[in-house]
Amino acid sequence: MSHNHAVADFLEESYPKFPTKIQDSYIEGYDPVSYAAPHSSLLRAETWIGMGFILSLLPALGTIVWGVSSGMFWGGSSSEGSQPTVTLIVGIVMLVVVAITAVGCVHYGRRFYRAYRAETGRVN
Image (cartoon, rainbow, N blue to C red):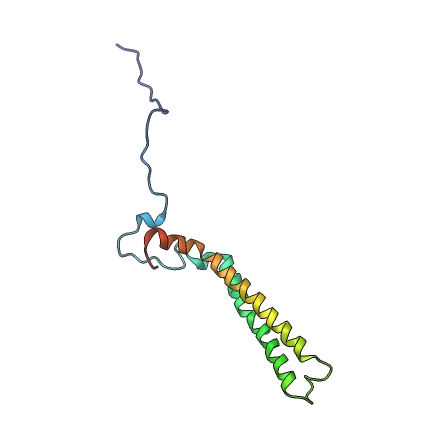
């Protein structure tokens, strides 16, 4: 009777590499549900913050309208003691800054979706 026990040499063994990405296991033709997919932009806080900044464009636009209307119509309460040019410039600066921030946040929030499209060629 032999007492030589076979011992596995773990340093020399190779193990199969299994895909770690969920899209590798998708069936051909399957469209993942947008909210449940790991690459979804709807799961990212950056996307929602960017959408909030998009809504924040409205006060900046209102400031521009206020500045334009103050310069056009004299004698109303909006033109008393105000400088319409300064209000217009502040509104334009606010609009540009908030718009750039909004586009940047949404673009950053969709980075995983763009990477998913580049890897798989899928649209959804």
